[in-house]
Image (cartoon, rainbow, N blue to C red; front, side, top):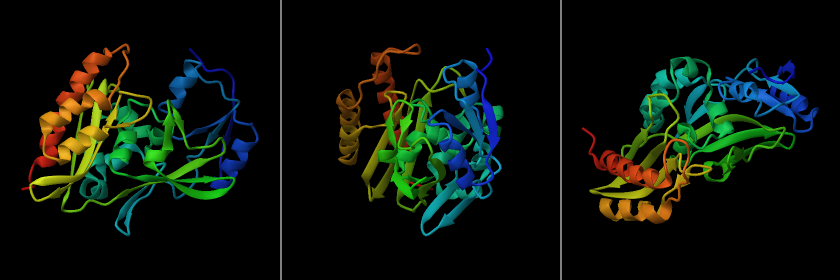
Length: 282
């Protein structure tokens, strides 16, 4: 299929992008990598009156470590993050997740900010952001603001972004010697959207874990924290953590798997990721 007719404008700056978005009263969409947007337009699931291309805005594709945090510009391509020494050393959870995102052609064009803003419930990066207790910087008509990941994802494809807001940066804590991470997912083929996945982080305190964060994706409208399982895992009980998933997760049936199958797979993933979290670095 072909998309419905739309106008196109290339933003010269953040201020210009905000102005352009405001002219169309919620019927404008931003174009970054376009890997999700173009498919949505072609299937006529969305029919905006204007596409605002933000690729020409300078300064939105940098990766930097500052004040104990790693800042990733919204226009950073997946492939740039995948090859980044800073990401590999300081955000190992994201480094683990990047090869699972689509296929090389997708990662060459898709952007970090686009994945976070689109908020597909089966996508890897939103769950990673929640597992790392990250945050996003947003610029809009009211100025700049920062939103924690746990408050950013609202509902199915719904975020804290307003119709004139531009996501500019994501920010996550830099890795520490005591911080452990784990990632796993099930998909029908490598690069397909996950049937279910798990991004996790924890702090090692001797032989125990603290500040456990388990963010499942593909099981709800947003990344889902498995809080009962987190508490059980922190107490040292992997079996108890798997059992707790029965109350933490209520996945629905979909075209890929039944809710019961997803619950079973969640337990399998948790055992795998728990082994990563408990593994002592060499």
